[in-house]
Length: 282
Image (tube, rainbow, N blue to C red; front, side, top):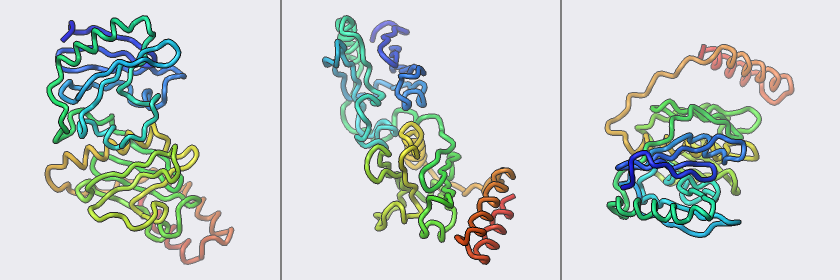
């Protein structure tokens, strides 16, 4: 491998080469893809890579790309091929005049690769835990042990509204289904063994995206963190006690509930039940 600490800087990212890994640091500039900004930096072990390519890019650039082994990176597994080219965290775009230098580093990387077979476990660390994000019909949160969906009055279907807010211990999950918000019917669905038989907007184990809701840079790292936790669960997790809600958050939800009640969208009985439920979370 090349000298420890060698750095190859391109547009939006720089790769630092180490003896057994590549440390990718992403820029935080306004033109940098938001997914890169959210990731910050990632250490990619050479054992997680299947190959390296160097190809001509657009407008006087070349593209160095490391190809992750199938099953090695929870982020790419969750993305399932849906990322746009410009948001691929394994691409480094360089000015064409650096092609010779890029070819040198590509050869050095290739020399350190060990396998292109599917990995039997994740070899790349999951992104730092995203605490939560807002979907169209609810707020998703994750604390490393439990995924929670809290429905929004305005977006959730009646099926989700009737089912109530949801909590899913990682021990009960078998996987994650992420569909990019940049395509039709984008959503995040938690899988529990059986194939889902209902649409995501009717499934209490899913949140749906929409314009401005569940953006890639928020929902994909979230999905990857959940998928990583599901894969590495070694023993049944003890469901964590539900955290106490922020009193200001409870007050806001009760106020919103009152508005719905006054507008005739919630019955007296529903108002009383839901208000009591919210107060019990304090």
